[in-house]
Amino acid sequence: MASRQALHIFTPSRRAMHILTSSRGIASTPHLSSFGWFDKIKSTITGKKPEEASEASSFTLIQFADTMEKARKLGTFKNFVAGRASEATVVNVFEKHSAVLRYLGAIDPTGENLRNTDKINATKHCNCTIADVEHILAKYTWAKEAQKKIAKLKEEGKPLPKSFNEVQNLMGSTPVDVGRSNLAKSGQISRNAFCPCGSKKRYKRCCGAS
Image (cartoon, rainbow, N blue to C red; front, side, top):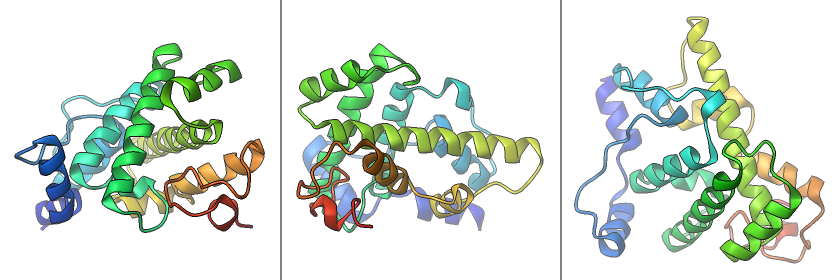
């Protein structure tokens, strides 16, 4: 029963597979390897232990980019995009996420010591806005914190989350929620600009709505 549930959660939709196979030439569904909290969640569903566990303390920006790549291939990356975005929008948002995470990860692996100049340079290198960068970093922070909480539950012998929704319940927020909070605090985005979360809505009607 558990294996069927795991297959249901981690198998991409037909539409996602169509996009992937037509644009990337991928002929089969890739397996989710041992990376971060996605792997920890998968191991709780399948009952199989990950071959290697990535501790939250060493969960880097580049590892998160790799996790996002696997999530995209599995059709679950949309969990990191606000609203009902089209497949094309999801792909566009993913490419932006990957570029920013890898660029900043090469400068500061954990993102804890990034300077404003690093973020500004990322906007130039990745052709995005400072709000995009802050939003993407917020999602990384959310994932890292989720991994810490899951590790603590495991140490205490408590039940572990078995789906993305359960992780959100554990956190009390979603990756998009954290992005909204950071954007509001930064004050670096026009309320009439398109929201960097990928919803194609104006910021004031999306993440900037109060």
